[in-house]
Length: 511
Image (tube, rainbow, N blue to C red; front, side, top):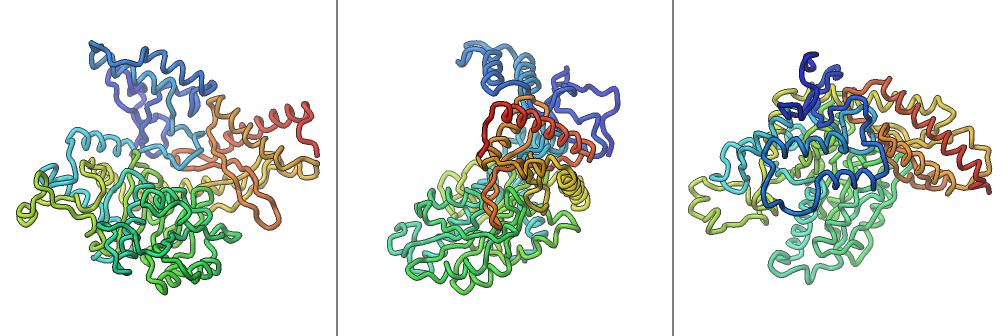
């Protein structure tokens, strides 16, 4: 697999207007809409200025009475993405679980769009129905689920988690003799959903959307390794007067990549007849790697699993999936509609996947997944992940070795949490708020420079240390090198010195 030849057009909006593979890619052909190789991952400037100049080029916000033609319109929009868009293929783009995407996945996604197939009925796209079923079976097998497993692609991990909690709610209601679909939750005594304090906020959103209320999401403390505490969960499950609907474990927390003790949680959950869902939106991709797969070896203990291939999988967003260990759990979604899938058509084999989703029209996202899995196989995707994992460890080692920086958590998958300031400020009498403010200012200066894109979060209090704002690297670019990461951290340190100097000079923060 080689990059484009030296004489290949570098502009995605040159006369062929196609996405390009970076000519500097050492191994993996990644797509980009940015042609300017000298700019960073973001356009330089304050957000208001970048947004305003984009709007000015678009002109008055109205549907034009006449168009400018296809070529001119494509050139216009492509130019905006080039000048003012994000370049995730840049090695200094390291803020979020938002990777660069494989060119083959972009090409396959264009095929899916051109087909305009829908997944609801057979006559809306027969080949794509088979492709999704193939992808679901392949990934269910990778997860260790048996032949009874099934799944569905969704618009994102938040929707996958919503579907999982919905199925769990219906299951808990049925166990109590309640048909929640027809009659609502009257009679279901104080339903609750347990999750780690570090779980994704979509768990609370799912509870709100399903009428349980956000307060139904009971958070469980995490240990020093950022994993759900089994002792606290056991106490909460035993609390009388509540109906345990589900426990949501996390395999790959957003900030730490930490993985809850799934088997231990499953043992507790079974005692109460509750549903065990694992949000593996981030961590599922570890299964591609021989080195990292043992981290998620307990996934088969779950009743359902969320996975996002637009994280580790290098797919265009959104490419999520909900897997269930027992396909019969989808029965509550079943619908027979006269104009779509009447009963006699279903009996004749003309049914589709309407009964797997809350959506009716649903695009064939499995096309890009099937193409990528076929193109690279587990070994290829595993090599990409191993590279990113190694980069994260290299970054952590640099942070530890640099007196200007401080590592705040060990590396599990591909994220690195650290602070500017480090040992050189340890003896200074500076407030926690002052140090937190430094981190935010460093990130904003880097972001508006356009040269470096890093994330930020807040690390909870641990071991007598107060909660602290952290900078975060999320390393998902398999073409980045250790040199790229060194250069990125050099810019972080230099910007940190500027911020510290400016704040010290102003007299801010002294205790």
